[in-house]
Image 1 (tube, one colour):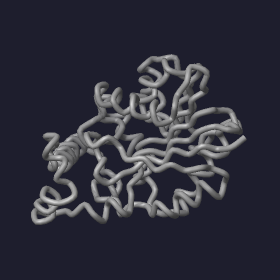
Image 2: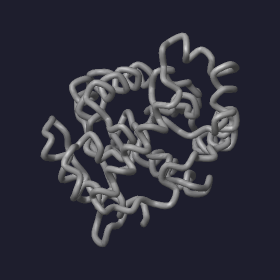
Image 3: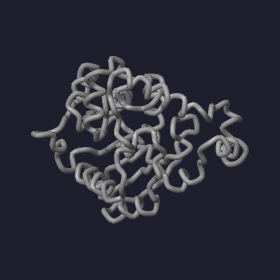
Length: 257
């Protein structure tokens, strides 16, 4: 099953909106709020901004960001997810897929700030990533900002080791700082197992890539992609208490006039 079909099935059958994101363990309002605070600071969101959340899912993070800006648009490629998002309320304009499931249509240069968060896991190659980046570039206004967040990072993924021996090494070496903050290193694995059981109960078969460690994207290649279309790139680590923070990074991209 492809990702779009997976989320379509999930949105139609899963009663809890927190799990329709596909994030193991769900996306609670509390976590969505903390992520939104981090995003707002990194993007320098202002009351005058027009914000696009591209790949918004049901809008948990979008709704937390909307009161901070003048206008908010949420875009997702899955019709049933959009319907769930609209039912959740909020002063948000929702845009879904076009005819025949084609990508959503966006006005060029219409948004001062664009967010694409927690959807890079659906890309497997840098060429697919390039298409996504070019879509974001077309929609952002002059002197606008794009945040491409929670992106699996090749360098960090290579440092994070799996298995019993690997977890012990993580605890005692570069990930040792997590212990000092009472972060549970096995949390993601437990959540994934519980969520997989939840999917089985719904009769949903996830994509073959679901739950497998993403090999990550080369940050030099991703940076070059943004620079080639006129962006100035800053790579920012996520707060350590966020899910996936040990293997992902955020790209904050500022475009010139």
